[in-house]
Image 1 (cartoon, each protein chain N blue to C red):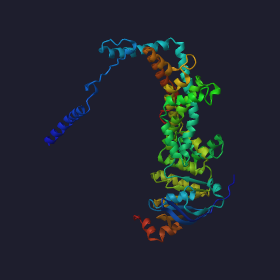
Image 2 (cartoon, helix red, strand yellow):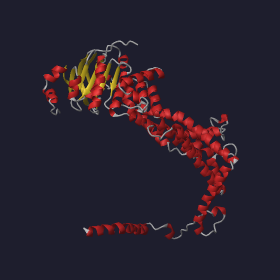
Image 3 (cartoon, rainbow over the protein chains, first blue to last red):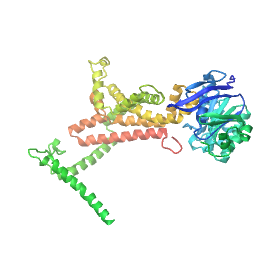
Image 4 (cartoon, chains in turn green, purple):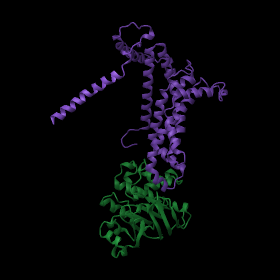
Length: 239
Length: 295
C-alpha cells in the first residue's frame, strides 16, 4: 500500500490548556519531510505534551495541525514510542504484531512481519517471552519495533532512553540511525545533551511550553541564540 | 522515667475495668433488671431434648460435625443417587447462570471502563450497590414476574430450573460486571496511550482489554460462581425446592436443617463446599493461572 506523503506538517498557534493553565503554546512550527528533530528542554518544559500534541493525542484549546492529508489518514502513518514502554500482556512477538492485527492483517502474516522486526532490533531470541520479563533496554527496542512495523512516515519518541544504560542507549541510537537512513522522519524528546549532539539534525529548544529556539543542530550547539539555551547546553540548571 | 511507665501501665490496666464498671452501672444488663426473664434456648430444644445437661451441648455439637463428615463420605462413596442428582442440578443452574452473567457482565464492565459518558459515575455506583442485592428480594420479584398472573406467566417458567437461572443471572450480573470493571479499569490505564496512539476503534479496545485481562476476568466469573453456588434465598422462592425437579444442594440443606436432620444437612454442606473448591481448582488448572511467568 502506497501512502500519500503526510509531511510537511504545519502547526499554527496551537495551545494546550488544562484547568486554565497553559501547558504548551502557542506553538507555530513546520515539520519538513526529511530530518531528525530533537526536542530539548528541562523537565516540565512541555516536551511530552508537545509531542503528544503533534501526534494528535492532546486536545488543543486553540490552533490547528495541518498535515498534507486528512487527520484520520495522517494518524495511521504516525507512530509514538512512550517514555515507559507500554507492555501488553502478551508475548514480545504478539506485542509487535498488535498494530498490524488491529488494522486487519491476518494473524500469520502479522506474526511473520513481527518476527522480522524483532530480528531487526536484535530480539529474535525473546520472541515467545512475555513482554514483562524483558529487560529495560529490550522493552524499549520492542516498543520501537512495534512503532515501526506499520512503516510510518514519522515517529515520535518521548525520551525513550531516559531509563536505559550506556550500552542499551547506544544500541537504541543505532536503530534510530538506521530508521532515519530509510527516510523515516523522527521527532524525539530528550534532555540528555550528549544524546542530542549525537543524533540531532535540528533542535527545538522548549522552555515554559514554547519553542524557545529552533535551529539546525550545529548552529544550536555552537552558537545558541538565547541565554536559556546557552545555559542549558553548558549544563547549568534552567528553570 | 519509671514513674511515667508505672503510671501509664496503671492507666492501661485499670482504665478498661473502670469504663466497664461505669458502663454496667449506667446500662445494667437485662438479667439484672426486674420483671425480665431470659429464656435460654438450647440447640436441642427443637428435638425435644431440652433436658440434657448444658455441659454436654458443646460435645454434642462436635459430634454432629464429625457425624456429618462421616455421612458426607458415606454418601459420596456410595454414589447416592439423590445426592448426585441435586449436586448436578446445583452445578447446572449455577454454571449456566454464571455463563450468561459473564456474557453480559464482562463486556459491560469493560465498556464502563473504556467509555466516558455523563452518568458513568452514577451507573458504576449503582452497579456496586447492586452487588449486595438481597437474593430473597430478587427471588420475590422474579416470582411475581413469572407467576401465572405476572407479565411472563404465559411461559410457565415458575418452579423450573429456568426460573432459578433467571434469578441467579440477576444476582450475579452486577457482581461480575463490577469486579470486571475494576480489573479492566487498571488495565485500561496501562494501555490507554498505546491504544489511542494506534487509532483503535472502541470495539477493538474492548476486545483487546477483554483478551489481555482474561485472567482477572476469570476471577470475576469465579466470584460470581462462589456467590451463585451458595445462594439459597432466591432459588428457594422461584424454584420451590421440589424434589426431583428444582431441589438443589442449598435448598436441600435448608430443608434438612428444618427437619432436624443435622447430620444429613451437614453432609450436604460439606459436599457443597467440596464442589465449590473442585470447580475452582479445575478452572484454575485449565486456565493455568498462578504459574510463574504467566499472568
